[in-house]
Length: 352
Image (cartoon, rainbow, N blue to C red):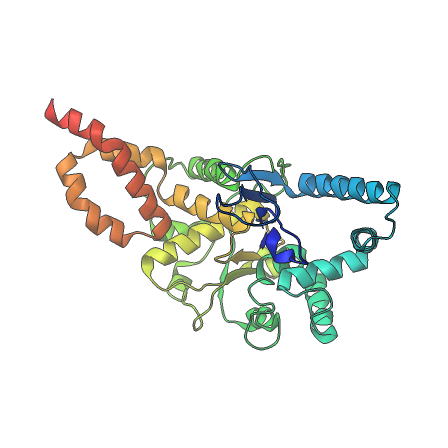
């Protein structure tokens, strides 16, 4: 979810500020005004690269900043300003749990305050009680305001989908205390991919598709049933009785299927048994983690470097086109980076 400060409008000359949240951290972009800007206010400074700050820290700083402005307005004889009134409403809703949950669900679905119908909000609150806030945080942005039909209705359809049953066979990190907001999702993902690789005694070698099914506890006779039910933009894993999970996939191509299976492994490792597993194309921290985990798990960087050292530069260049076109997009980027970084060393080695 992203917001540009200028969208607030109301006649103010706002700085060029953009906020984008991945649910754990907020990235902030800021740029100075154009040199030929003819506005009454010109902003001179910006940041050269995005700044990342945890959501909780961002909220605390923002509350302090607005409180300071509101107190200053009162001190100079401007009480009851629009800012003060709006700030009071927001803080009151923050203190009241039901109001806080209600507003958060509205925002997750893409609605402005009180824009969503009471019927849809009642349904959203019911889904939250049944399936948990973590599930809605990943699915509500997709099946909210911009979804076809009634908001969030497709989530219920997953319960009746056929799916494939599995029972993951590896340990998880769900009970570990992790420093929220202090480590990028991809860093955690790479570390966790290495842990799972070590657990299965295969730190750098190739992982067969059947091995991925085995890790998820999907029987070999059920592996062929791993087919999406129509065109969907989300794949889920739903906890069932006897500690099994019903996987409802969305990928058909063999390479995409491998990446999807690996994302399930990463999500289960991070989330644990009792939560829905959700694979989407969103930019939330959880989805960033999944994609980075799958890329490192399927193609560990150390193994790739060792592989590149064993083949000649000419063969590497010959392989480049066919390989890059056959692998999943995140892995394709891995190949591009490693080829560029190692080509000079490979050429030196080849000429000796």
